[in-house]
Length: 164
Image (cartoon, rainbow, N blue to C red):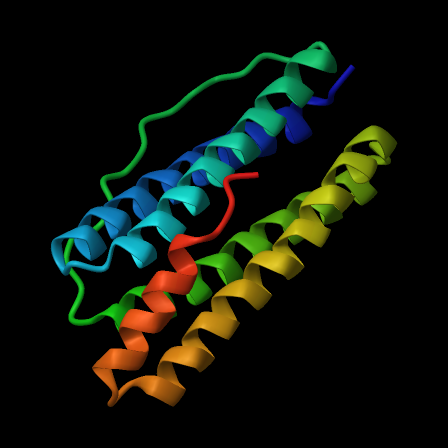
C-alpha cells in the first residue's frame, strides 16, 4: 500500500508531467509557425514521452492501492523570442523536472518505500538522458546560430527522431 505522503507527491508529479507535455506541445505549435517542422516533430515526441511519464505515475499509484487525484494543468506560454530561447527553456525545464524526481526519491528513502525507490530509479536515469538531449541541442544551436542553413539541417535531423 502506498503511503499518503508518497501518493500526494506522485499525484503532484502527474500534474508536473502533464504540464510538461502541454508546454512541449505549445513549443511544437510555435516551431510549426516558424516553419521548423523538424523541431516541432522533436517537441511532439517530447510531449508524448511526458504523457507516458504521467501515466507511469498514474499506474504506479493504482497498482499500490492508492488514489489518483488529477488537478488543473496551468496554461503554458505560447511565445518565445527565438528557437534558441525555446531549446534553452527545454533544458531548464528538464533540470527542474530532474529536481522534482530527485525530491520524490528522497521522500521514498525517508518513507522507506522500496517499491517507489525502484520505480523512481527509472525516472532518474531517464532524466539524465533528457537533460543530455536538451543540452546537446542548445550546444548545436550555439555553434550554428548565425547560419540559417545549418539551423535547417538541424531541423531536418530532429525531424527524424523516432517515436519510441
